[in-house]
Image 1 (cartoon, rainbow, N blue to C red):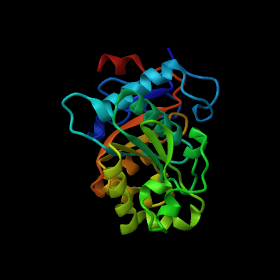
Image 2: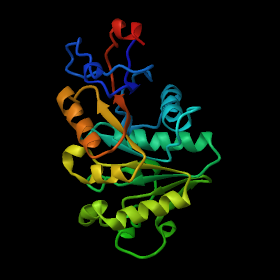
Image 3: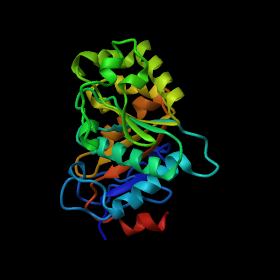
Length: 257
C-alpha cells in the first residue's frame, strides 16, 4: 500500500525523528498513528481533497484542535520545512474541515507574503488583506472575506512584498490579537523558515506550529534544523505532516505504533 500523507508526532526525541531505511531520500518520522491518504495522480496543490484525503485530514484536525482531554489550541501556524511542500493546500483543507466539524468561527490567514496562494485555494479576490491591514487603522474585520457561514479568510493583500518586515512587528501581534478576539480558531499559512525569519516571529504569538514536509524533497537535516529553530525561539512544534508520500511505510514502523 502506498501513502502520500501522514500526520507525524513525537518530535521531541532525536533518536525517534527519522527512519531512513528506504532508498528514496525522503524522511520518515514515527508517530502515535500515522494519518495517510491514497496517492493521487496530480499534485495536491492543484485539486480539492477527495473523500480519502478529507478523512485523513479530518484526523489531523481532530488531533491538533479537537482531541478530547487535550489543551485548547486556537491559533496554529502551518509552515513548510522548505518551499513547495503543499503547506497552503494543507492549511486550507484543514480550515475547511475544522469549520465543517464545529459551530465555532474559523479564520484562515495568508501570512505567506513571499508566495501567497490561499486566495486561489478559496477562489477569492486578493486586493484587500493582511498586508493592507498592517498599514491601515481599520478594524481587522474590514479586511476579511467570508467563505461560508463560519469560515472566513484574511488573504495576503494587495502589496505583500513590501509588508514582510511588518510580520515581525508589534503591529502584526496586535492584528493577531484582534483575530483571536474575533474568531474561535485561527489557522495561519506561513512561508518556510528557510526563506525568512518572520515565520518564527509569528510562531511566538501562536499556540504552536504544524510543520509540513514533502516526501520527495524534505531532508532529515533541514527538518531537524527547522524544528530546532522553532524550539529555540520557544515555539511549540505540535507535529508534522509528511505530504505527497508515494512509497510504502516500512512494516517495522507499523509494528512499533
